[in-house]
Image (cartoon, rainbow, N blue to C red; front, side, top):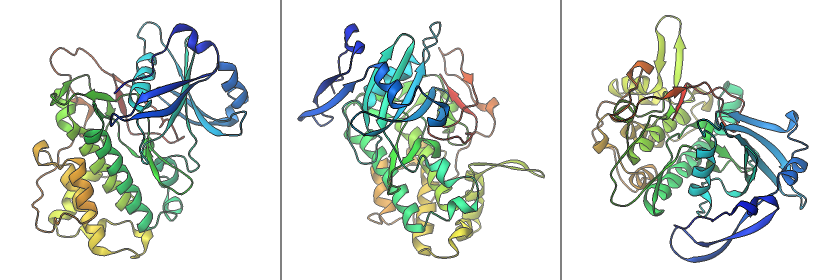
Length: 372
């Protein structure tokens, strides 16, 4: 995979950079545009607060209109010079997205550097994020029929299968959650926010890194050991599927029982042979029961504590489309990080930070993200 090569004067004015090689090795003529900061200021009316459509730990996102009329989303990352935080996310996002194309990945149109500010320009998504459109009450969820939920789950699975198995080097996202799934005008899902992503060569089984992600979606083996694998994303995807089918929050607070995790609830209902009761009640029974149970089982297979038992994303796609029959597949106990005290750093990693951020594409609060 080749990435755009930037020189210091490239960022002073708007220009086009041609990415010469796709993820599959074919020669392409995909344009990766380098914008001027003035161009983006004009597009967003000076990054006016009324144009803000999201805010996250890595920066704010604004809606903008380019001179040619194209509507875009502009992410602004401010670099903290001491830690270089923001710079890492900027470079990682470009490395991950500059020359890969998939219908279920957000499209990066270009970037800009201006002093300590870094700007990333994406296609604008009319329906914001899954967290924004889906969470926050029954009224929001009524817009999501079973067919729409099925298509979103499948789209995310296909996007992740492409990242994990088709792109070379492979890409592990590290922060799959509802807030990082954007929805276009037709509610087609686009995996977004690659600021935490890691690249995997073919001969690498895991990477030892500081823990990053979001509590509730965070795989336990990664949280405890700092060993990141593609199965870490698989776990997060499993939680997401349970969330989409059930309409429940990943972490609920109950006055009597304290925090309750969706993974625990799903496992409890599975053991009671009562998975159907977990399906979102706002659907009013208007869904194929066998398919709903199948999706919940796939979610539980993806969150199993033993990583080797979790399916690869390509296998998960086949399970969701019923190409692989899972009716008699035994599901083992899920893993869970129920407390931040369980999150540790592997040998050679001395610290991690906890911050409270909203999704980069929504105004909703996310459950306790972690970042390196």
